[in-house]
Image (tube, rainbow, N blue to C red; front, side, top):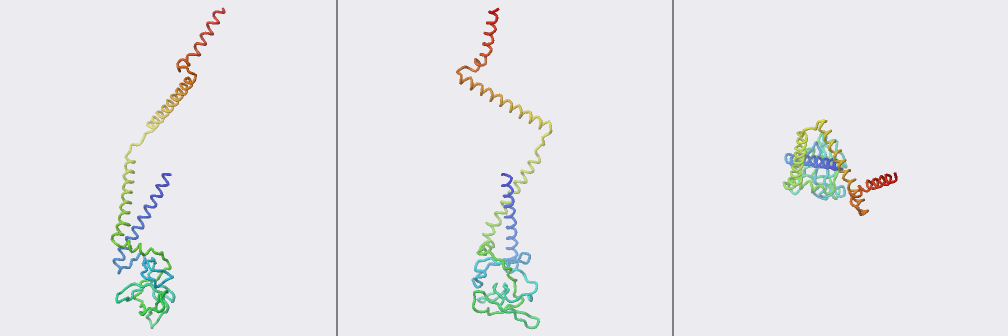
Amino acid sequence: MKKAIKIIFDVLAWAVLILALLVTILVFSSDRNNGVANLFGFMPMTVESDSMKPTFKKNDLIIVKEIDDVKSLKKNDVITFWTIIDGQKQKNTHRIVEVVKEGKSVSFITRGDNNAIDDEIPVGAGDIIGKWTDFKISGFGKVMDFLRTKTGFFICIVIPMAIFFLFELYKFIMTVNEIRKPKLTEDDEEEIKKKAIEEYLASQKAKDEAEKAGEAGETGEPAEKAEQKPDEEEKKTEQTENAGE
């Protein structure tokens, strides 16, 4: 049972460490990439509005993948791109409703699934961040946003990693101590076994004597007298035989 608990604890500890490392990579990569976290071409995004309901909604976490060739995009693909909203450059994720090709250039007309009209600004090839992979986790976007803050990073990443390394250090010290302990020789092992047997026999003898004492107490005779009684009977028998002769 203890071994099973230890294995489960180790698995959970490593899972926390791996998750912490992944989040750390995402946080630092987003700082270097205009706020877009990127892990091997995959980018977690927090949905910031309900313009794509019911496909996904505000505070959902979606995963977007980089596109090698924007010309491979087609109608009904959901893409994340840079656009101008309220006079500021922001990320947006909408569905392609039309592909516009002009010579060698291509652009895309987009619209939110929850919107009645198309987006005002067509999306150029250079504005595209990636294509939605159809993967989402409802409500998890808030968690990712919290992890990207200094407080969230410290509570959810730094502290668990510190606990993990302290635990591993403790295990290492215990292992070193075990290695340093002198190993028992065969003679030592035999001596230990011999002592164990002697202690067992002594305990059994004490148990037997206690049982005899208990039986003597039930008959109302002292234990010594109960032991001497058979000898007295034998002496009386011998005296009778001698008298007969």
